[in-house]
Each structure stands twice: as structure tokens, then as C-alpha cells.
Image 1 (cartoon, one colour):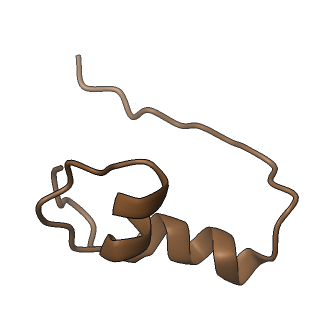
Image 2 (image 1 turned 120 degrees about the vertical axis):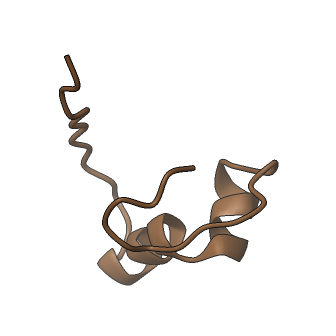
Length: 47
């Protein structure tokens, strides 16, 4: 069964900084995905 994975977190940071870390490839590499080769912030993109 393909159920979605939903994770909710509260961060003590400005929303712009959090959104950048979730949507910008360079920021994603810096913060939590150093092995990331490609990312597109669109529905259905698989990493």
C-alpha cells in the first residue's frame, strides 16, 4: 500500500529560512542532503 509520509515539525526560525532549506537545492545540500544530485520542487518529483 502506498501511504503518504507526513512529518510535522516546529522550528525556531523565520519561515523564509525554513522554506529555503526545503526548496532550494544548494540549501538542501548544505543542511541535510550533501549527496543530493538533482531536485525540483514539483509534485511527484522523486529524490
